[in-house]
Image (spheres, one colour):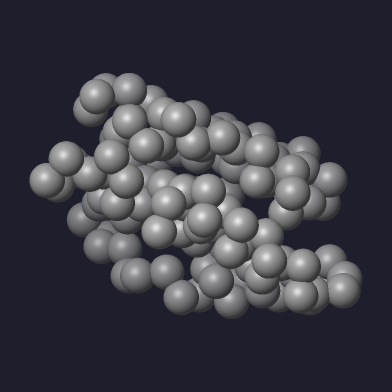
Length: 136
């Protein structure tokens, strides 16, 4: 599935819900479904600065694709991680670099996240794009 197809799939899923309480619950449920993140990877090198809650992202290049593992100690932030993983995980660096972030506005996240969560989301995105630049 292309990144644009994955983005549209997420947009369609969010449009099912009539209100933001249901969308927040969906985000939380997505976060609960994240794969286990090994404690050994919770280091200062994998910790993302700029997030109010604690966030760790570990990436490695496998067969030309960036594989990300990530977690947070906050439920909604874990959901935001799950959203980003659906779009960016196991993509080539070139795919990541050419992927637009406009889908976040289409999801309504720009209007419904607190400023600190929005800053954290952008810090995670910056990390993903920086990882792609390094591995191009």
